[in-house]
Image 1 (tube, rainbow, N blue to C red):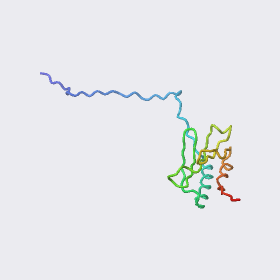
Image 2: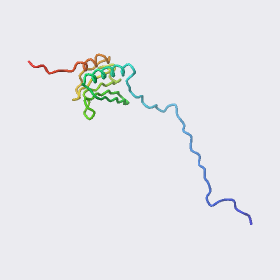
Image 3: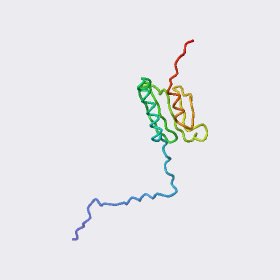
Image 4: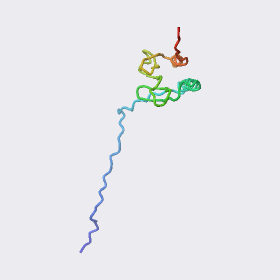
Length: 128
């Protein structure tokens, strides 16, 4: 009698198809971010305002269509100001926009320094 070498559990190997990368497949959209010089300007202003006791915290958000720098008086609050970098508006209203806590655009511009100048001198109530 011939012995059968097959076991009750046969191994079946199925090869995976190798991923084919086509040249026409779209690459993921680039992420918008602040460059090193913009970060330096933002952090310089942030440091001065923290030293003056005006601001306490900040957040950086890098999204597909824009980058946002938000400053807070307290961590749990809504941001006092947001500096937004939006490349779609670079040729129209300006690459940068400064937004208040209420959502109102305070300043737009093609250069970051003039936009940040609005935040350097906080508004004070003047009594007649």
